[in-house]
Length: 221
Ligand SMILES: [Zn+2]
Image (cartoon, rainbow, N blue to C red; front, side, top):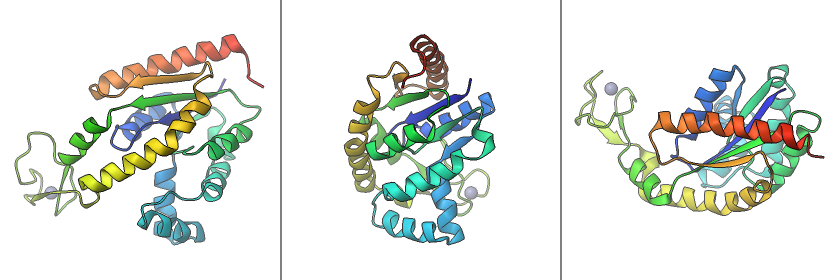
C-alpha cells in the first residue's frame, strides 16, 4: 500500500527538512513544488517565467500552473510506492485536483505542522547566513563564518515584514484547506514548536495512526 502524504505547515516551521527526512527514511520521493518552481525559473521554461513574475510580486503561482506541474510529477513511476508532497496543495481548488489525480491509489494522509506566528517570526529574525559562502549560521555562532571567515548577515528575504506577509497569505489560504481535510480520518495536526527530533517522532506516530485509520475506514469514495 502506497504512502501518499501531504505535509502542511507555515514557512519557517521546518516542514521542508522534516518532509525530506521522512521521505528518505521511507524511500519515497519528496515532491517540493517550491524546488520544482525554482528549477523551472532557473531553466527559464515558460512555466518558470510565468512563476517568477508572480513570486517576485510576492504572489502564489496560479492553481492551473501548480496543478499541471504536480499532475505531471505524480505520473512518474517513482511515486507508485508513495510520495511526500511539500508546498502543494495550497488552495482548495488544488486539493480537489489532487484527489482526482490520486483516485485509485491509497488514501491521502494529511499532516499539519502547527507553529504560532510569533514563534516563527522570532525564529526567522535570528536566521543569518554567511555573506561569502552562504553557510547557515548556527545558534551561538559569532559574527563570522567558522568555515570561511566571511561575515554573517541576515538573509535578505527574511525581513520581518516579508515574513509576516508570507504568514498572512499562508493563514488565509491554509485555513480553508484544513477545513477541507479535517473531517477525514487520515488528517492529523501536530505541534511543531518542539525540537526537530521530537517533531520527527510525532510525524512518524501521526502517519502510523493515519494509516491505521485509513485501513479501518477503507478507501473513501
Ligand atoms: Zn562562509
